[in-house]
Length: 145
Image 1 (tube, helix red, strand yellow):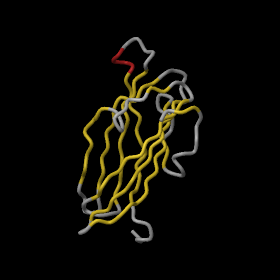
Image 2: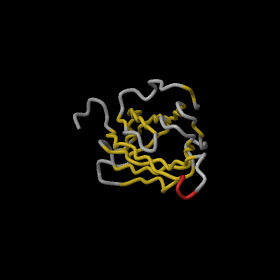
Image 3: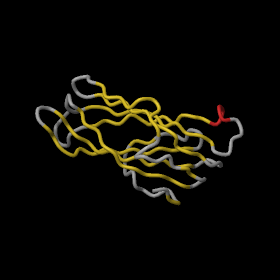
């Protein structure tokens, strides 16, 4: 859930520079192979508010590409994450884990963005901003890919 402090929960994964004061760390790990070529991964994201104001995570957009060139897309901007739309005060963070399957095999990539809203902003339109998540490679350990 939301917590106080930076924590190191996202490990050594890819990070993004602060966008609207929000930093995202992302890490993925391979879970299993499923015949004929599908690879299953878990990914963990940590969203931290390093800005001066209160922000809310309103939605997300993910695009997964597999080895065969297939694309799996979470629509832009699917509401919330893991059934929640967390509100983060300055210094707070939210971490969650989810999963993805690559039907065409690995390696593949994961990329996307979060839609955030400045809770204390008077103009609703101007309160929305997007935080890009650095692309992440999804690969099977020891596969040599």
